[in-house]
Length: 531
Image (tube, rainbow, N blue to C red; front, side):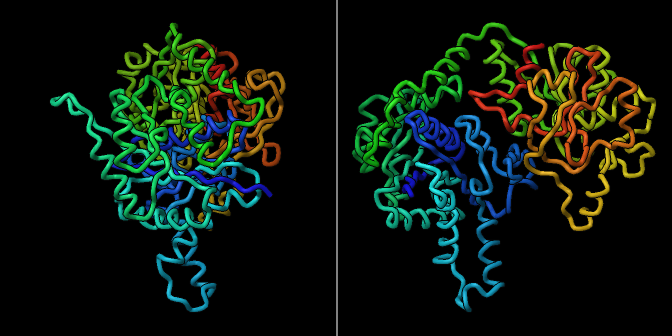
């Protein structure tokens, strides 16, 4: 069995430097060299997963195909590389401590005193190495969340220190730092980077490669100075400048030889036949720069924060590039939408996305938006809760059930067109009502969606509790809203569409999770193409 190489990515000076984008770019570059990679995120926060975190706190909750709620960086990993992440690609401090405590309760440690070293660090090391056990990957990239110096990151860094010794030449550390520009002095300053590296060295970790996040292009002399003061080879200091698009980052890293430096550290080279495999990526970036036609899309949701709908935003952007359209996105807070202002608010848009979410806040505004887009034939795409709002709005204003609602919002509604199914009601007693991860869906012959997908069977990722109530199915279809995608086993409705309108489709699943740079999702492609 081949031995995987481990790459650890850490960050210093400040947070939000873009470790996720850098890790994704490294993965993309190593793939173009012919190697199989995976990327994993280790987050220092104590929550078990981000599923219960407020999007204002943590941004979007991303979901893997096997049903794990994860950090939004896993979305970057998948969009850049096309890999499919799993439970092994997302680890939090909460998961680590929970596993150790469970083992202690079972008696696995035979009465030993449980300590951070070795028990917590051993658990972290086991999880870092989990993706290497099957021998599937050549490279395993591990991004450590947070910033060097954060107290909660200490166990993860100690685990890396130990692994560097255990793995020897099969591991390297890449440290991402910040080089600020002082406008008053007209200078960039490397001292924060020097201090960050010294702090990393004090923990027993010597970085092999430094990536300097900067707003200003750094001269060669600056890079050489950083190399000298941080004990890093001159060719192993690269800069990550502000760029117009995150998708230019892999090309910028390649231009500076980051992929060559990584392979050289491991005594490796690109595999035969992979010298020009960045061509598709270069073509994508070229198309992005040449976009001329603009279309306006409104994202209607209760969070007016771009990270809350990160995957939707990127899926629209990617689809726009592939269809030759620059998608200009505006966030519309659904709590502020009323019958009086909805026309003025939504009329400038070529298309509208009704965003996912949980709870009742902002739902009436979403339905006000849907009424406007449906009656004015504006292309409308409802995702998860967005689809449910489309169903409720149709029940109220077309079927005539003025009190129609979701049992999530009003448990006492007489017309619960969205509800927990019987199997979920039984599970709700155990607290396990979420449908998470990828499920199969069969598409109706002759439907709009089967024409979009080009196949009868698909698999898409879910994150929700409530479902379309099939007791109302015939009434909806007679009134013109067709249920054109269903789970083949449970018969749960996964897709609704109104074929008499230009583009009016709702999906119970989250298609944005499956859209990648080189394989954009067909629903987003068709939506943007019809704007």
